[in-house]
Amino acid sequence: MEAGSVDLLIADPPYNLGKHYGNNIDLRDWREYEDFTRGWLEAAIRLLHPQGSLYVFMGVRFIARLYCMLEEEFGLRFCGWITWHYTQGMGRRRGFSPRHEDILYFSRGSRPVFNLDDIRVPQKYFRKRNNMAGANPGDVWQFSHVHYCAGERERHPTQKPEALMERIIRASSRPGAHVLDPFLGSGTTARVCQALGRRCSGIDINPDYIAMARRRLARPFTGFDSVDPRMQRTPRDLPRKD
Image (cartoon, rainbow, N blue to C red; front, side):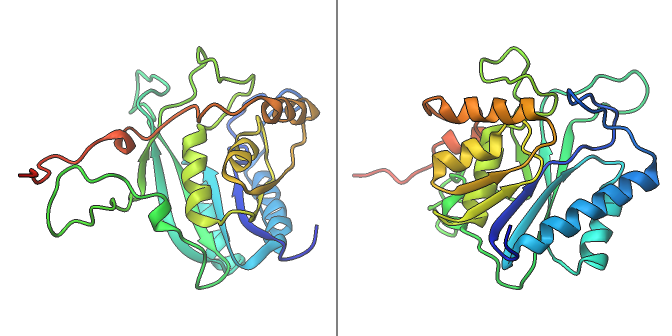
């Protein structure tokens, strides 16, 4: 692929937690995983447009190191640390049960695309000082998992909700933009790009997942498999029309 040809890079790499991805198991020693991360980042960032944006999902054990790599080694510009909060997670008897994952948001240049008006959340209350077009969604996002019993669930261990990807893609790209997902998995990024009129390139080491993504793209689009519950609210205390 040509250097600088990607407008938006969305990466959901393995977190090195021992998950089974069909033809490989995500378990490396610390140094090997760090080298693996550095290798794919180097290849991916080469493709990123000078004003392009990068979003990387990561688990808690490696995210601090990943932040340092992106800022110090690759010289990217920090734009945000997003927390994806979900209501159900792994239960624990010792320690606190995890209820979130994190997404690091960086850019190559100082003026990345950011379409705030495309992702505004309806205000909870009417106030004259509020922008009634909607509020900035902030950096804590609440989307439920795609549960194993859901009709939209694919046979993939780490499928991400479509509405979460929708927010990223709407915020940091324009229609017709080129989006790259180097860990395509079940094809969520490609499906959302298809619905929003973006071009998507996806890569995965497992050919079964590529076939899975192609099947998703061939199905008619009837709506995203998840929503931010705040998007459906109506502001309270709206002025009465007399």
